[in-house]
Image 1 (tube, rainbow, N blue to C red):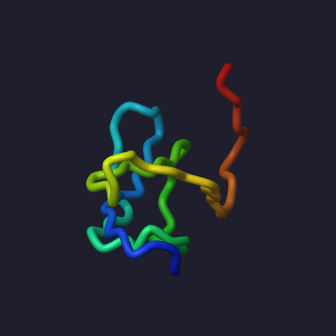
Image 2: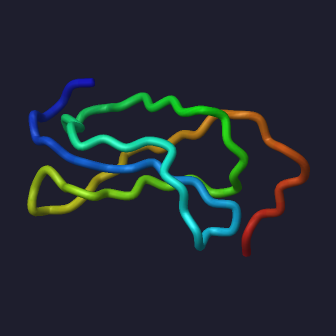
Length: 79
């Protein structure tokens, strides 16, 4: 953690088809710094950060977004 003291809110969501999303993590007290987020193992093809309250009028900035876990089956990249 660290960085600026601007509070932000966001959710980490997962989906199998990219249309219907399920929350696996949610915070309303992000500090604008780096976060390490852990959540229970779940089966999903897509993961996204969904911002629900930005800390400034300028929007959201993601410098890195990494997801770690086990791949299940064959993964087919989207075109």
